Length: 226
Image 1 (cartoon, one colour):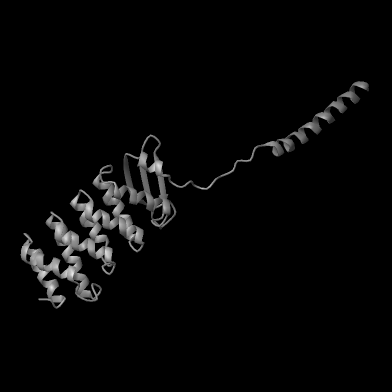
Image 2 (cartoon, one colour):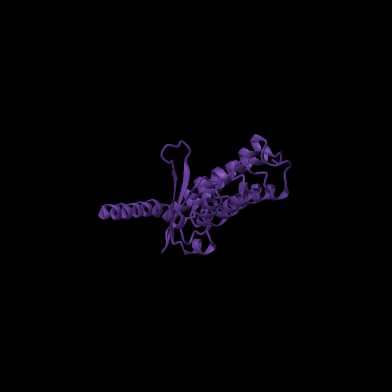
């Protein structure tokens, strides 16, 4: 009888411990906090030596997003919509650093940034690429991305600079085509300005490319200056 009483007492104590222990474990377990995705720092961008840019469509979604992979000792994978601040910042960094990133990465960046050309900061990057990128294909695509914004004085000056100064005839052809299309569609210039007239007259007379000379003459006629 004594043995049974003691055994029952010990079993009861053990049962109480089994019931209490999980509750204590829940109370003392550390809580894991999930912080917001950190912003890209200048140091992270500067550490990147190469990049890969692609449109990706997540599983179960019809909306494509942008993936920017920056290769460095600590690789970064930035995924988001084209208007995501980190995505846009990474893309403009790739576009503006032609010494560091290859033409394919810069062209792929342009494919995304052209959808954001309404943003003045993005247009500034596009204008810089159209003027200064080492690759004529990138310069041409940057000009193409600026089409529709000819009323912006910075865009207009970029087009005129490309028409007058770019050594690649394909870039000059792209510039005169955009200018002429803007004039014909009525979205070009409110009135003939001296700078535009001077550049067009110079190209009409002196451009080594016959097509550029002909289209410059056509643009002057559209402006009533021929």
